[in-house]
Every structure is written in structure tokens, then in C-alpha cells.
Image (tube, rainbow, N blue to C red):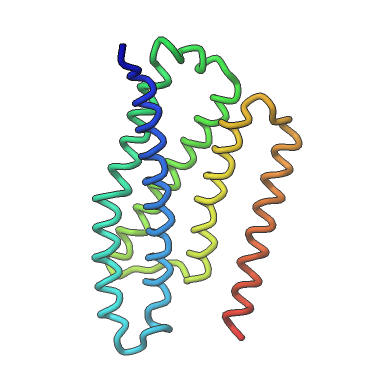
Length: 181
């Protein structure tokens, strides 16, 4: 008998990795676009055009399909007879809540992308760098929740994630100061 659930779990993980890779790189392209005028001067428009082309290809060929397949294979696994009990597990509700927030993040990135296609860049390079770390936080939180499951004490887990976020944002500030010098 073929282990179809094993395949769906594997595909869920493969597309999840691709989705995060797409999100990480997409927001880097937002950073490069936002900093084009400062970094490329009179060649800025040529670089912006190239960044937009890279964004389109990444977004529609990798990021969107990866998100949709991640959700598709995750739902197949979740609603299979073998794993139906997961819907009653509290850690799964936490994970699905963060996945919902990650999907919202994806849609907000889509909005930034469509604005940049129109020539509108509402955020600075530094704001986009901070925005890039939000995906990192989702990756860390979702991974810890699903791997540790009921082993995470709610208070300590929450404090750990907040501490991780603070360290991440301090790192961004330090990086900004180093770049300015």
C-alpha cells in the first residue's frame, strides 16, 4: 500500500520551503527597489525596471504557486483520516492561526508589489528590511509550535519569541548604523 499521506506531508514541506524562499527574496527585491535612487543614481530607472521584472517572475512563478500548494497539501494532510485528530489539538490551532497571519503577510507583500509596479514605493529600504524579518519570525514561530507541540509552555514560548524578535530588530538597527558609517 502506498503511503499517500507521507507524500502529501513531504510536498507540504517542500512547497512551504519554496514559499518562504520566495517571501524572503521578494522583500529583498522591495529593499533594492526602494534604495535604487540612492544606490544607482541616474541608472536608477534601469535597475528599478530589472527589479520589477525579477519581482514578477518570482511572485507569479514561485511565491504564489508555492503558497497555494503549501495550503493545498497541508489541508489534505490535516483532513486525512490518519490525521483528523489534529484539528482537536491546541497547538494545531496556534499553528493555523500563525499560518493565517502568514497568508495575510503574503497579501500585504502582494500589495507592496503592485504599488511598486505602478512606480509607488511607500516604504524606505530600512522599513522593507524590517518587513523582511517578519517572515523570519513566522518561520521560527510556526516551526517551534509544530515541532515542540505541547512541550512549549505558553508563557515561556511567548517570551522566547518576543526576545527573538527584539534581538532580530536590534540586529537590524546595528546593521543600519554600520551601513551609515
